[in-house]
Length: 123
Image (cartoon, rainbow, N blue to C red):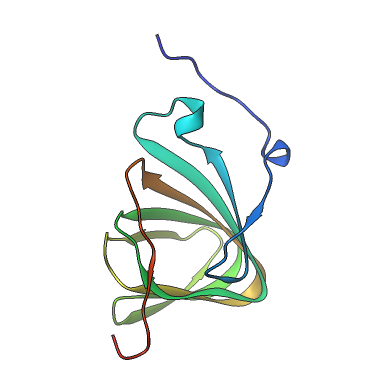
């Protein structure tokens, strides 16, 4: 029988996201916790932070905790803030640009192989 997991987020290291600017991430719950289907991650973006246009092989479900950012999904831009929920389909170009920091959000993704592919402005 699977066992539940409870842990404080302060015990989990934030690690730099090399593709981003002023962006860090924690894996709050994931495969190492015996979570079979999804990983729950927390992203924190500081002043001048964000992620360039990129794609992922897996969908993202996100919930904004703090701050404000412009998220571009495909060819649409959205001004998002605390309390907003965001869905990004798999393989869809998207980017983040912080407007009010810290911009923090939870991001849930399937526990599947994922590849981030950075896109230039012409793709």
